[in-house]
Each structure stands twice: as C-alpha cells, then as structure tokens.
Length: 295
Image 1 (cartoon, rainbow, N blue to C red):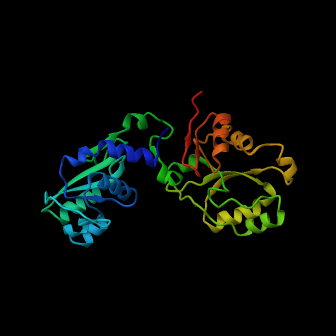
Image 2 (cartoon, one colour):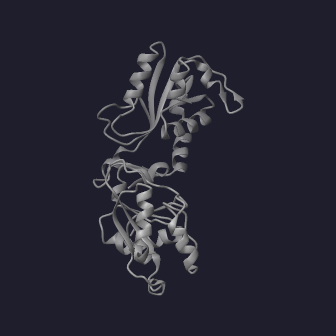
Image 3 (cartoon, rainbow, N blue to C red):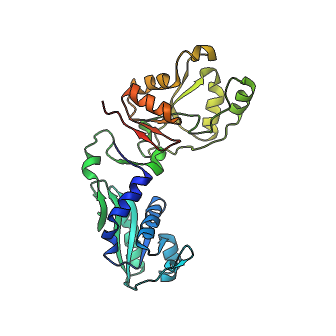
C-alpha cells in the first residue's frame, strides 16, 4: 500500500520543484481541489503566482490574477509559459482541462504537470511529473492506486475499508458512564467527516458501541446518507460485559477475519494495537498516522 501524507507531498514538491522552476513559468494554474493545494505549495517554493483554472478563465487569461502572493507583490517574467498542475495522474483526466485552456488561449504556452505519476496514463500523460510512483502503485493487485492523506476517507476504494464511527464520522460522545448524557448525544450526534463513495459501493463500519443502540446509529447514518454494507456493533446490551473485551481487540477481530484492506480508527493508541493484532494496515484519523504491519 502506497500512502502519501501531506508532509510527504510537501517534501517531494520542495525537493523536485526545480523541474518546474527551470522552465521559468509565468504562473501556476491548479486543478481544484487537491491540485490547487499542490499548486499553492509549489508556488510558495518557487515564489511565483498561482490561481485556479476557474480564476484564469474568468479573468480571460490576464496575468493580473498572479500578481499577488498573499500581501507580497509577485514580479512576473513574461515568459508566457503557464503550468497546469494536478496533484496526481492515473489515467489522465486532466486532458480536458489542458485542451480547454489551449483552445481558449492559443497565444499562451501551457505545460501540464503532476506531483505524482501513479498510473498507466492510458488517456493522457502529463508533460512533467515531479515523482514517478508507478512501480510502487501498480504492483499492488488489490488496490492499484496511491492513498493520499487529504482525501483518503473518500477514496474510490473506500468500500474496501472498515471505518470506526465515533471520532471519525461524528465527534466522540460523552463517556457512557453517564448513561443519560450518552444516550441524549446519540439522538443527535455532531457529524465530523461523512465519507463520500465515488464507487457507489456501500462502506463498512465497526464501532465499539453496544448493539442496543443500533436504531440510533442507523438513524444517524441514514440522516447523513451514509450507505453502509456491514455494521458491526458490540454484541451485548451490557457495558460490564463489553468491558471484558478491549476496543482494539474487538475491532481487530472483525478487521482480521474479513477482506478489508484498511481500518480507519479515531484513537492513535488503538490504531497501533489494531495494526499489531490484525497484522494489517491502520490509518489514524485524529493524527494522520498510517501504521503498517512489518512482521
């Protein structure tokens, strides 16, 4: 599994920005959403202006959209070269943006680029890739893509993940020692990150909640339009019985016994324990740490 954190992306941009800088571009045009994040980091490193495709087109390709970087004036070199940047490229969907800009502004020079080249690029291959990770990615038969921290929970393959609930999809409820406060919270949880499902395949959830709260749990999922295939809840109505099994052991058992490729856990200590017990990778939502089993 190839996992790329935000820090890793910044480091790769910082160490490979010269591949773009040596072209002396006039500005960087980011493809929203994650491509714009990458474009901002690259522009900061090269001290040149940045904008989104939407801004560039809405301003008729005028260079004034690049003139300021925060409060600092940007001096442009009038090279007439513009970088179209995406964070990653698998098959080359960015071709539509490249074609649109070239046809709309034929007097300008557009060079396509990505931070990570991760796929076969059957449709289109960018002119420049800062880092080529195809060997690491395509050798993974189960999930031949890279996983990026900033969109991991909404990845196309997330139907193969097993999600924790509290601390991921909603904020942690109050301690259930106070039964009344706990049950009142479950009636109207505060949502945190509700994953989308690009594949349209339902996701799976494993929560330490007692199964007597299944109705409240499913109401929350339905309200937030979460398509759920498997919902594992602790099989007891008693907190005392549940206390005999630690959360990490309970979650690791479901994770290990099924064909899930990644567990999304809210607690960092439990994430490490689940990884060790299941001997499979675990991502901690609260810290951004990815734990892998190394034997």
